[in-house]
Length: 160
Image 1: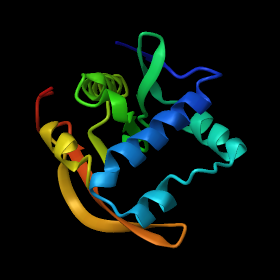
Image 2: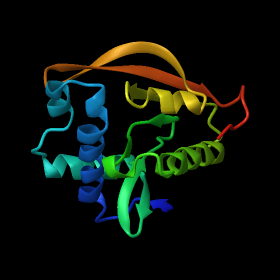
Image 3: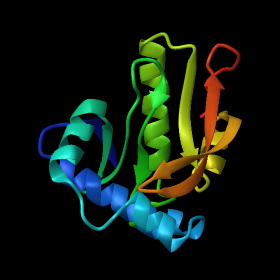
């Protein structure tokens, strides 16, 4: 596996990772109605392309196939963090989290934050993130529970 920066042409492969992660992994923690609202079968390709260019994610490849991606915004917010259903527990998520921490150090960030699904909360907690608030996002009229999680980078050493 290798990690690299996002580049033109990655967009639809990233959508496949997003869709797979939600439909094959998050489905254990969310209802079918919630899954359909979060990752519908039909996508607005133009909006997806715009979104990926906006967040500029890191991309993990395994054998030339994109299997995971995540981003880090300039203020320390992680907007997307997804690993495809067929590539769970193989190290892709760890590579992404390590890259996020390395980039946070380059940017001299004092904190990381993200709105984290029920499914991903244990993973984020393993890397030192703490739940600040349980909340729900309203997506296509359906509530999806998640948590706002923070990690203070000044109070701890990088424990990966």
